[in-house]
Image 1 (spheres, rainbow, N blue to C red):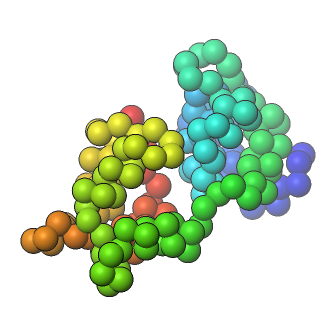
Image 2 (image 1 turned 45 degrees about the vertical axis):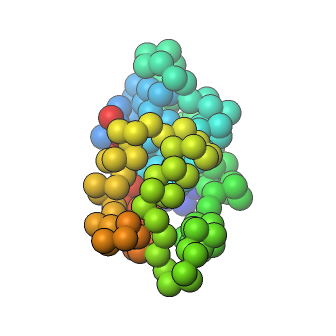
Length: 155
């Protein structure tokens, strides 16, 4: 059963219990959410490559199919870490004091990388963001810490 340690298999079983069933599996549209629930950070392209679908009830993924996917995504090098995200946001830190304009972050999330819509960005800000100061700046390191410690689930 793939090269997944016993403890991680128990975590996968729990995710299957919550998101579907051990016998029937999970819907392929939920593949990304299942991987994220297991502390992985797959891109939308990677989810699609691994068998994720855009419509519900097109396909089911059983536990024995999921474990190799989990193992492969876990080994993926294309995932960013905290330090990567901080380095990226430092580009917007014009005063080099750990802050950036909230409007610039919002623009980056809406226009660059993987698609997020306005509602998703607002949810993200509500869950992970300190209020902006009088000049429109936010401390970006706390934002990244909260974002990475508590995965946000979009409806």
